Image 1 (cartoon, rainbow, N blue to C red):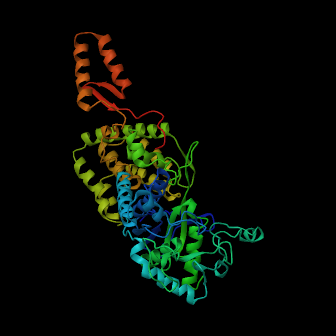
Image 2 (tube, rainbow, N blue to C red):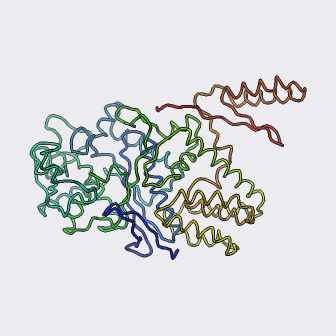
Image 3 (cartoon, rainbow, N blue to C red):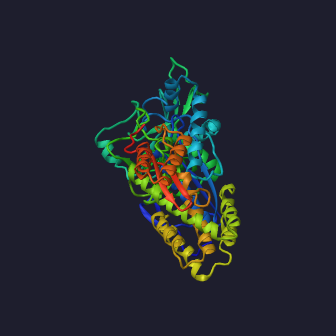
Length: 513
């Protein structure tokens, strides 16, 4: 374990803190997972690249990690103010399927996105619908402590009973009262009160509903995360992560529930960490309108998911990041350059296959510390060569400084003073933290065929062969015309000593869809 302290930004207090886990050998993390009513958009996925980076950094620092990401398949309304329909109900009606079918389909789509982004599997994938009885028991405990009250449409949490409610979000509760902005159903004692259990309307039956002491219905969205985090991680754990949009309402409500259940001031997690928004210029990604970009949207334009991951890592997780097609294309170019250099190193190193095999071992660990693996990867490195790992540790220890880590990676790969084997071993260490596929991908893997290209690979190869014949015949005008024709159809040629290489170009100026 590195002696350098890990500094992480705690949203609860808005400050950098030296991380000290409750258990010195095992870090426990809960991450708010997706509501599986639609495909994840690229902004959603930023949260999971951030969480994956956090987990990789912790294992790099020598900790074992127990990581829980939940699947929300019930309870999430279209409004955080306890208004509107359940998002899962809406999706079922939209697609003329059962909620269970919708949940299964979009859960698998989400898993596929994570795999394509090199995001490691968590320790546990709990689903909300598998924990209904535990949610009822949790709600009963809140009720027994006087933290709830009943309304016609369900059971509500009285936020006036919570210790310093809204501190995480820096909420102005007095201003809400003065403005009489009572959100949600009538009869709430406080504007910020929220549903623990929502009773089904008497004139209809939901696809997902359960019997409870407060009537047939479904749990509130906030309840599930308190229940599942406590079940798998204990009533006080190390880190809770989520998108910045969770900080003001969802996580404030989780903390209130946690305090009520434990009859204490404990928030549930010692650190609350949030990634900032991904901004799409001139547009707001909305699943309700269908106007949003998915990872598949990028693939359809010819952009590899690894390029998108690199693009995200160029900024701090706490900075807003503007999505830009040209920037992602630029990230692809940068990643291709890194992969070419890694390929050169692999050809120059006799033990390359063993190093590559070592670097892939962590994927099956589900959160094991990398201490032994790092020792194997750094075997035989000189003190000067090991300094590159110290510099990586310094970057990571500064609130997961991925932009600096990426800069260091580029410098070490092209440092001609480094022995090839040392450079390859160091690249493998950096890969453990950054997850870019440096030892898994080849440069040509990044050139995906955009969905709109009509040429087949056989047709491209035939034209290249025709161009070669034209060049042999010194018909350079014909050769140039064939090259320009391929370029117009989205194929770029590159003449190399061993022949002509080619790749698909991304579609320019792609639109959301």
